[in-house]
Amino acid sequence: IGHMAGAESDQALTRAELIRVIEEAGFEAVERNTYFEEIRKAA
Image 1 (tube, rainbow, N blue to C red):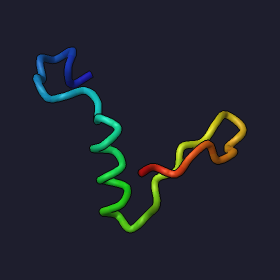
Image 2 (cartoon, rainbow, N blue to C red; image 1 turned 180 degrees about the vertical axis):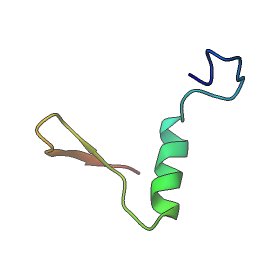
Image 3 (tube, one colour; image 1 turned 90 degrees about the horizontal axis):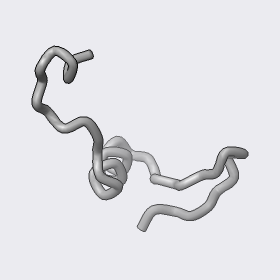
């Protein structure tokens, strides 16, 4: 909705940005499949 109204901010985070945000919150980033099985830990 914000972008439809003319906002010019980024619409997504890169993989690296997402991992950084997760780790800064004190969590471990883990990629999972649709069955919530671990695919790999973010490095």
